[in-house]
Image (tube, rainbow, N blue to C red; front, side):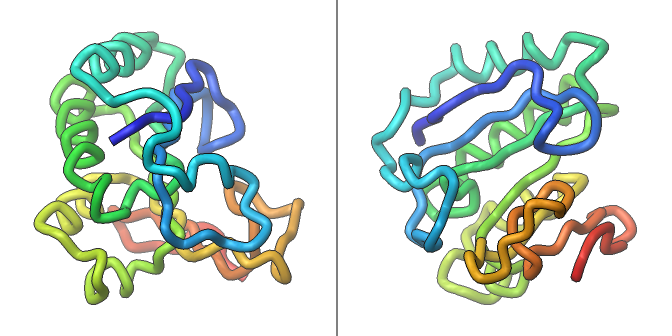
Length: 166
């Protein structure tokens, strides 16, 4: 897996001050995607043990509320194994920090579709908030919090409560 970007202090992608990582690779190719350069699985730099150590070090900052994982597509079959490893390590060292995950797939597609892997349920069960659904240019709305189009849903995964929806 490659990482296209790491934002050390991000206030746009989730609640509070966060560290955000953007994985490379996406097969969805949503029309109007703001991050289309990350469609290429080779874009950015290789995710290594040193990259993971850097992320964990950034999360050591008491002002950082949690980790946000975006893309590209974190839930692509080629990315899920490393995304699961990141989540596992963050939960191990920082159990009180929350993890948010953006995916262009719907939850039902992830659980029943051709992107299901042995890591899918682990990821979904261990992230705190999921923003799911493809970006649809015709439903783009710049006033939405934490999402780009009206079809996308923000869900608190612990109580299965939809935070933001149409």
